[in-house]
Amino acid sequence: MRWWSAVAGFAERHKILTDVAIGIVFGLIVEFVAVPLLFSDTRLLRDLGDGLVDDAIRIHERLTGTVEHATPYVFVDIDDETWRDWGYPLVAPRDKLAGLLDRVMASKPLAVLLDVDLAWPDTSGQSALADVLKRDNANGPPVLMVRSLVSRAPKDPDQWPRLQSTPFAAAVQAPPSAGVGVSTATRPGYRWVSPLFERDADGVVRYARLFDFVCDGEAPAALPAAQLMLAAQAIDARKDRPEVAEAVTSTLAQFIPDRCGAAARAAPARRVSEHPEIELSLKESSVRVIYTIAWRTGAVGLGPTAVENGSSRPLVAVRPARIVLAASAGEAIDGLEGRLVVIGGSFRDSGDWHNTPLGAMPGALLVVNAAHALAQYGTPHEPPWWQRLPIALGIIIVVAWLFAVLRPFGASIAASLFLVLLTIPSALLFKSGVMLDLAVPSFGVFAHKFLLEIIERVELVRSKGFRALLADHGEGK
Picture 1 (cartoon, rainbow, N blue to C red):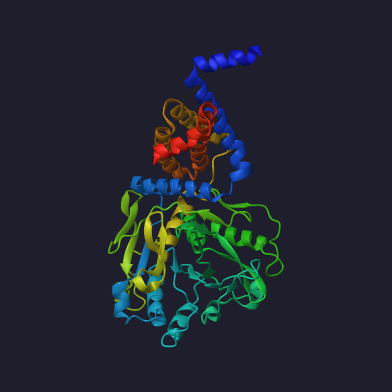
Picture 2 (picture 1 turned 45 degrees about the vertical axis):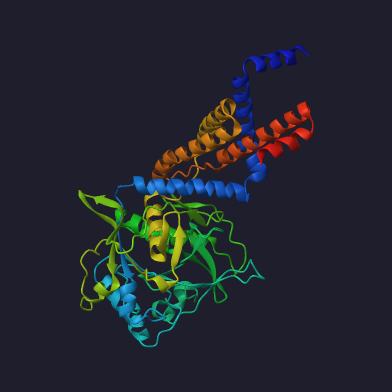
């Protein structure tokens, strides 16, 4: 056939151009056909994507020197020295927590998160903490309290987790008429929140929950995540009204089914914040955390510098709990007013340390990272297909050209380096809430390499027979 002869002649005269064209076609098939249909949920693709996004997060953390219009945090830290002074108790002494909460609430913060498990009883100081929680706090800073959950039974994966009982539920519980009698309904100024994140198979925490359906006795309930409610407080502080916090409450109420374990009500996704854009939906109850704040033991300030009205200060100030308790009862602590305060622990035996793309950090800093990311960037999203197309096409053209002019081994190294360099603009896009997925182009690099190796082997067999494979294998030893 003449047309085939013409194509073959053109390919022979313009080998590099032909190889690039073939590579582009192959890359587009991988990008928009093979991966979405066959490989969208494979372990290889997830690992490639996670590795590149982790690199982008580390670059983002190093490039972020200052942040504007960011609500600063204070971490009241039960550190190793504080834990030693308390006598290494198995349970955080409730009278100490009462003292911390008393002083923090008197300091006029925007909100305070008590990131300590209150399920375990401590008779020595239990009444002191209960007395603080019984105070009328309708006009005070919102107090968020983590509520531990009893996990789903392995034999019944569809069963929702159940609320762990706590002796402090009665202290903050609203009258039965306010919440259909469930203990998640609290008096004004208090709120139970979920402490859950998601740990990947490699032990790294990359995703934060936004909410969880729970069984409160036999009643269904939706528990917002600590990081979501802290972010809501940060955004509402800019507007001077509880708009986002109320939107979260009303949206989750629409999702709750009639009974525990039932499918959630059919409800459309709802945007609870416009600037930044935060969306709650039944399809995605967790989001990737864009970490900005790394942990440094002994530091008094963490993360980038927060700039507001010409003044600058560390995004996260660290205050040892023992120093806060040194103040008199009811005395305001300098530096807490107008900040979001998290009371938690970094002592080594807390069991609340987690691996992240920025290294190990205490659970309280996980919450701060996730809350800050939500308040600054919103829920991360991929760009629409019409924006992904030119990005993917550009990557495919470069990779195809590398494989056309270099041997497969050298082209693989060069293509991998090229993808690593792309993590820099990917990191810069985080500030717009855009999560650029480089996993598919990465998969295309390795698939392209694998295909070229197969083609080389087939051509070797056609020209020299199967014994050539054995000889080639022997030379490679």
